Image 1: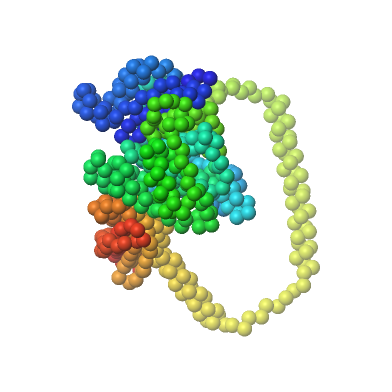
Image 2 (image 1 turned 120 degrees about the horizontal axis):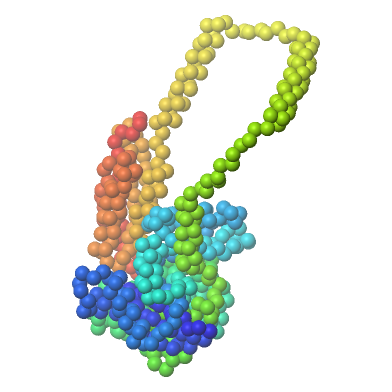
Length: 512
């Protein structure tokens, strides 16, 4: 089997692992901060610097693999799970795209998307795992890898790549369980699996809010942050899937965190299983979690998982559809016509005979209709109303029709405006209540919601951005000309601080 490169494009590092037959041959890790502040000219685009740095590192490590599997952090992706009813296969894709608009902050036209379905016949619904990325981000990665001369075989989410580690260790995958991988340098991922199918995933940046690099240890700030984030993740999951009880916690981390993780699992009341990454990578020297994610991606051809999500095939499908739409119709060459008078004469004869036959059939039918009309019973029409009374009744009907027409024309339809609201809400902000009224003086809508980022300034900034995006939207602001944040209140919700907010949207007299 030829060797395959697994490439993890992280937030702070790029990890590259070359593997063959599940054995690691080469491993390199590149700091993105080092590339940005390197010796290359400041005016050189970041993409050019990145390609140059990767080429140099691959050459120095003697890596000659020509195939690559990419794995990306949750920071670049949009992953949502939701339920829809049972539908015919041909209607499923359009229904998923329509439903996904409620859960993503971008237009679906700006995304490359894929989804996977798990059908529950007993509950009569489909659980959808929706997986997408902005086209511009995906094109950047494809451009970088393409300039390295590599052929891409797969593009996936890093947390899903790590699930292959369960196969290396032969972990029992029945039932509902959570997988937690701890990475201080990049993202920590919390994923809940049911029989191999992800129900829920959340990405955690443990470095946000820690003031110094020295805090990134097993000290109190890190542990408390990890505990709080895991509890929040569990709370989100249990509210979304209250009937699917989790039976254990599997942790992928460095050996140094084993005791702390076991203590955390005991506090949460979950049986835990610890996977020491150094024992299952066929390598003596330890690997970072970033490198393990890259290694897991390189096993795409060796270890098959129930997940079939692949952004590469989705992008190729979009390209084929656009190409088919753009292809012009092929004009057929004109064929010269030659008149044969014998054929023309026969055609005219057929037309004349058809006309005579039709005329004869019509005459017979008209005769039958005339006989029926002559033989029908005569009825005498009796009217109890005079002409003025009938005219008055007609006028009354006209008034009622005008009233109904006025009600219909003056009715305010807000379907487009309501669709805009979920589009402007960023992640970690949610709508709690919506109030709307229409009166003689105008219309008013009040949005009540909550925001949680773990930082008050971030929360205030996100809330103000919601109001700004609503003002900037031409469709929404056409109806609601006055949009402002009228209330911001930071309150305690269970173990976390959230910000309650109210946004008032008012419009002038509208069609009434």
